[in-house]
Image 1 (tube, helix red, strand yellow):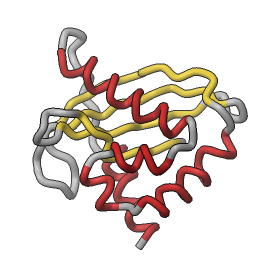
Image 2: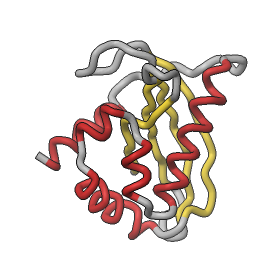
Image 3: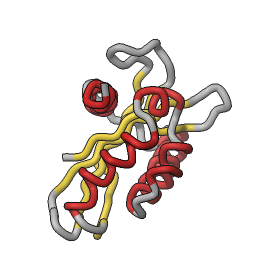
Length: 140
């Protein structure tokens, strides 16, 4: 079950073909800010808060305890974040396996203390209240 939930999150994060956002797209700055705020919680190892602030799809796919274990397993060995830069921001109306919506897919080039050339993909959904929330996270 946990493995299937993590696979679903990874699919949401990386399965869609990215189409770059136009530089003037006002959604981009909001989506990037939401992703960075959420990533900051993961950087501090705050699984409970990052789970709480994630989108409904994320919370329904993985419980807080499983998220805590996954975060520790994937992030702890890499060490602290040294640098993170947005490489690409794209918007999609559809993603595999989920109803159509308003999605943002962000790719970051990230340097950790113990892995200098990593990549993070964060998938966000604009929820009914208009806020962008993380629904997928993949790190390589």
